[in-house]
Amino acid sequence: MFSSNSTAFSSIIGHSPALESVIRTAQIAAAADVHILIEGETGTGKELMAEALQQSSKRADKPFVIINCAAMPADLVESLFFGYEKGAFTGADQRRDGYVQKAQGGTIFLDEIGELPLSLQAKLLRFVENGECQRVGSHEREIADVRIIAATHQNLLRLIDEGKFREDLFYRLSVVTLRLPDLKQRRRDIPELASLFLKNAAERNNTAMCTFAPDALNQLKHYAWPGNVRELKNICEHVSALMPGEVIHRDNLPLEILEDEKSGTSGYILPEHGIDMESLEIDLIHQALNIAKGNKSKAARLLGLSRDAFLYRLKKHNL
Ligand SMILES: Nc1ncnc2c1ncn2[C@@H]1O[C@H](COP(=O)(O)OP(=O)(O)OP(=O)(O)O)[C@@H](O)[C@H]1O
Ligand SMILES: [Mg+2]
Image (cartoon, rainbow, N blue to C red; front, side, top):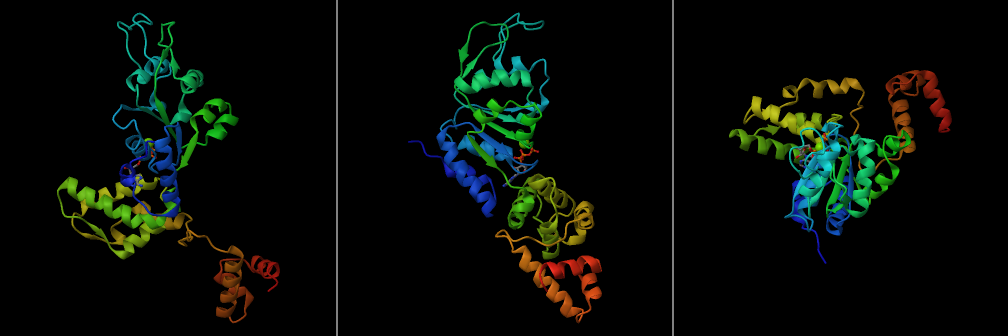
């Protein structure tokens, strides 16, 4: 039996449980030669994961064709996918292969699958079901052996509800679904990722490597990271270019990272094993009452609550 080559996954950095469990599933799925759906917000590493899956599959030495479904002109999409015959349309001066013929024996990575026009979804379904396809302008059916790895940052179930994505195609493609965690759900990986990106940037620019001082690293760990790992990489490249070889302090970080504190993140880092919210609330109320020497209005202020909201919580916990 073919077993996946785990070194292909070593490019995916991080040891947080949320990421490690996805990688474990991915290693098994890579070897099983099934279609895979990768979900995750922008910059979480969907393309990196697709490459690792391909490299560790039995199709590793076969073509890997990357298609961005969001960037395909609607009128050309079918001919781009399935190829066309000479004379099929104006300008078709010779027979051409499409992505499926070019990927024969290998893998197609369908990025942003949620953007695929409905008209092509029906044809893709037939291809996914039995490898059958038809060039534009031809009546002959061809068979291609291609594995599909699809990726999306959208909620496909919502698109199905809205009538924008075919349910049957969704179930065919998501034989295995890998959900990549947001960077804010795996903050403990930030120092390792940052250090790798600083090292790579220094090598590429041929300069000495920067390092983050503890105050800067602390700030990075508290930031919300809407752009996920890509955003962290960009910031590392930014400081490497502007301050080569230096120790980077909090104040040297780009403004958006410093200003994020004001935009609602509490600064509190939820441990990955979770917390007991009820006990935490009771504990904080006791601490506030202690500091305020029993004065309820002052204790409420310490917790950022109105007196009424504080009294409500006292009652709720029978305190
Ligand atoms: N776990 C990781 N370890 C190392 N590098 C990573 C990791 N995750 C992402 N990256 C890097 O971050 C950048 C963004 O990753 P990638 O392009 O795979 O994200 P994506 O999910 O496809 O994003 P988008 O939805 O915007 O296309 C890449 O340079 C990639 O190499
Ligand atoms: Mg991508």
